[in-house]
Length: 140
Picture 1 (tube, one colour):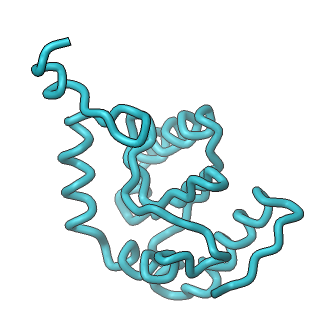
Picture 2 (tube, one colour; picture 1 turned 90 degrees about the vertical axis):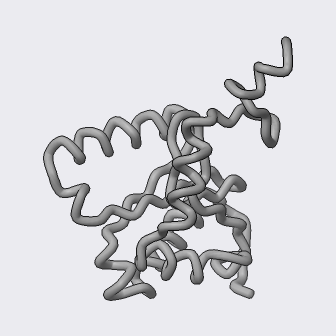
């Protein structure tokens, strides 16, 4: 393959990053919502169950809000734009695609992050613990 192949396919972490998603990924990381910023502060640096989370992470043809590769947990935050019937169909399709990749998808409304962060973290912790039975974690 010639040098031009890297304008179409760029390799990363053993996979392939598609350039059309690379620009979207950069934009999403720079323009995160208040709910995303709030949850990221709670998840970053292994603050929840000593698990490593990534934000705005590419999985196949999607960029997910938060991803824990150790247990393949995806956390998606849904704002008001997700309330329409068409958006809910897209979300269901996206969830099915992510589950086909072996991921568990947890969807949380932005409101729970902003209004009751401890409850949101409890839901994430419960989902994470269900994916790692028998493994003891203690918060840092």
